[in-house]
Length: 367
Image (cartoon, rainbow, N blue to C red):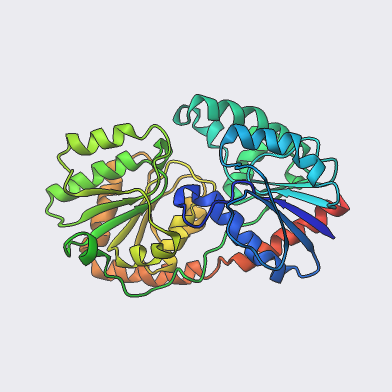
């Protein structure tokens, strides 16, 4: 069976701005060939995508990272490019509507419907128009969590029997190991870590306020925020200044993906209080490194963390501060979270993601 995988949001490994969707796409492509050797795979990627082996690669002649260019390319050129494929899989939210063959669509989240005020108007308008049409036309829809599946059924009215839940995985490089990050970057001060794009639904403002309370109570930590500047992030910088935390909150815009494990490993605590996630990959990465984790109970995050992390109400900086203090002040609790996080993370592998995705391709071809 010939399968074309549309991966036009796949970023160069030098660029962390791609965030979770690019990690998902790259790991899927790297694991599909071994998980499903019977498939004849072709990856359709941007010109600067990282090298891929064990499958055919078709690079676009133009950069597809800008939304407007990618939309035109996918709708006008891709239907011609995929004519020889038996199944076409779009890995991020939208389909070329004239593909003319069985299609599989991965939907990562429906934040543009759950939290429309937290996205730029242009992005919200495009997703609001394109995603529902794509989801209803797809032969099969992959949801990356049970939470996302429920949203697709409720908000997009896609029949439940056309949706398959395929969880994400965690790369083997995320594991316990040595780290000298505190000494290299913070003068030996311990730190609390957050990894994720700076955007409103991540609730980083709540994290900053909770951290400010910890500082007032005597915590010696730095708050390290790794992630690109997404949108509507300016109030975060104002908040840090207004609380007098300029010397204690560090915005680390870019960290190469291969260096992320040592940032996780050096942290005393990983905090991820997001209001909404399709999956929540950083929570899984942190647990795989054995870092005690505090996250919210919103959307998919409890589904990913299970009982291996402390969970709090997504909108409460008071609850968040209390949970963070419990971990930092209780070595026994921190040790238990480390161990349970390691066990939980082992349940999620990219090989399993790829194998389950290949099964969905088979269904789509028959369907």
